[in-house]
Length: 533
Image (tube, rainbow, N blue to C red; front, side):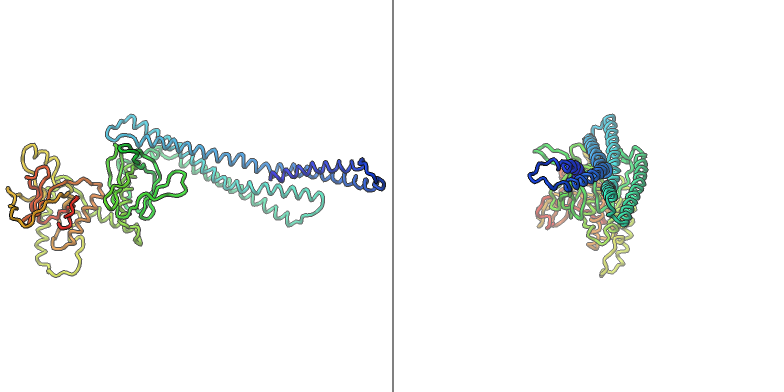
């Protein structure tokens, strides 16, 4: 358009010079100068016509400058510059928010300073509000730009066409009414776009006011820490997390990145990147909450072969637990089923209904009486069940819903009191221990294993292997749901005569010699002979 306008200005200068040159033709000194009178008079007429055309070209150049060049220059200098400026402001607000979030993430969990925390939280809220406002303004400008760019292309061409038509109409009738109709339709279309722009601008202004009128607490990180609404049925999750990177033997750095799950993979997309990259394969992996460098809401992903994977930090308790639940659901490969959402809901509802963790020995003893009655009644009913059974028993037939689970083998407070008094530990399974260990010199089998206590729960029957799998599933599910990962280490002595369990601190203190009516789950640690056990 600048070239067209420049060409039109050049046409004005050229016609002006042409008119002068036509008038000066008679002053040329030619050798053969006779017979030029008609030529000169004709050239004078042409000079007058060119002068008239020069007036028309001058008017056309002025019209092109007002109706074609000016709108596109205003679009470039005003609208595009405004969007670029708002983009820069949004980037500055995002950087300020990142700095405030980094300061908030470094708040210590153990030595918490209320005043410092309050100032940091206010700083984060202010940065978020500023970022939110700048993003809304940038968003509104981008939406308006979608309409203005269309008008910015239509209006100049409309002015160009009108200028050319007016130019040719004054010289000759070269355009038909169909072109007038077309140009009228173009003008109507521009008018309708202007109406749509005004309606969209009003709608965006109302939405902006509604978004900015919300409570200040929604900008505060971890504002619902007392009772967060946690969705444990997620099979997809996305959001910002802090990634722990090792920079040396003992030094680490934390980087705030955008993470999202895609199928069975954990992806990471740095700021400014057009796509995400693979960080961790989540199939058959495990995840647990960990304490890391005095930072809150940290969790670690472990690979299926037991190697420690990546350590991440969420910004709130809700985000932390939802990430853990989502990764647990993905690790079970629920996303490969036909209806993964329904499967995740069913599994979590079953786990929550069937699992009630009890981590104190006192609560366990209080619930042992009804469990014993249930066991006795079930043992009596088992006597009349035929031995030949083909059908697989249901979970309710193996373990009663609501059966309590004990995660620790002995209460730490009781252990501390027993050590101070010099007495022996209480057996959590309600059994008595012998004063002496069985003689094992003549035993054909004698092997000691280092084991860790995962949990125990009462069962209705011990005649099938399905009860083992069901109890294992419920205990492991309960540990994952309630984020209980600490285990008590013990020594398991296997002989041809008996099984005995002792404490590694006091080997002479016998914890368990035999179990009846209870199913204890153990995991052998770093022992190649675990399969033989």
